[in-house]
Length: 225
Image 1 (spheres, helix red, strand yellow):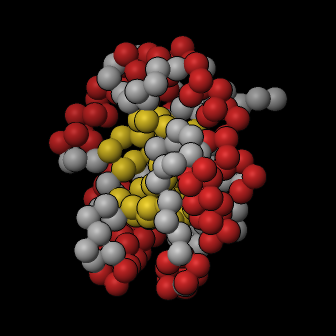
Image 2 (cartoon, helix red, strand yellow):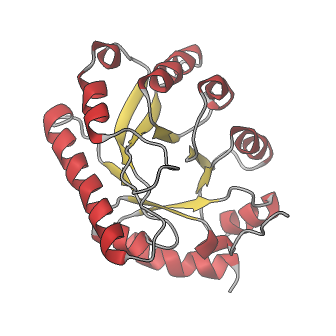
Image 3 (tube, one colour):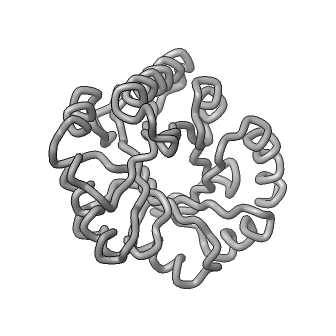
């Protein structure tokens, strides 16, 4: 099926369930992104800062860009002028740098705390205790140009649906807990970013509010040899 047809099918599901669809366009050429854009998609997610900046400069300005990959502090300045949402905040130092660069650009940048839920050493993210420690800290309270709007997590890459379901359940439960403890009156704190092409249906069942989908829209990435 075409990119447009894939999107149409996906959006029937996500729109009905009021879940935001982020089209993961990393490594995809601008022509394919434009095909998705012309089919009505406006939210795109990228992993690499340089690739994201290049695409931002060359593609329509009403695209909402999300940074979903691991972010180094020295790269924040390049995306601070335009980024809509950073999913992958996994340490206080990064949050402080985002705050600093947002202030320089006279912006408030929305962020998600990336929480470690997978049974894999290769994944980034804060442990549950580390996230709570961050939220309780004076350093966090002093930040004026970032706004936490939720959490993000990546499940273990496994064929075991029970394990994936449990990991997503843990993240949603954790979100509910910190919502009550730290953001009870903050209507902006509402996002749970979990679920990709292989597990987004389970993620939605467990309470995801935004799914990050690449191959189901664009097809599988070609492996570079």
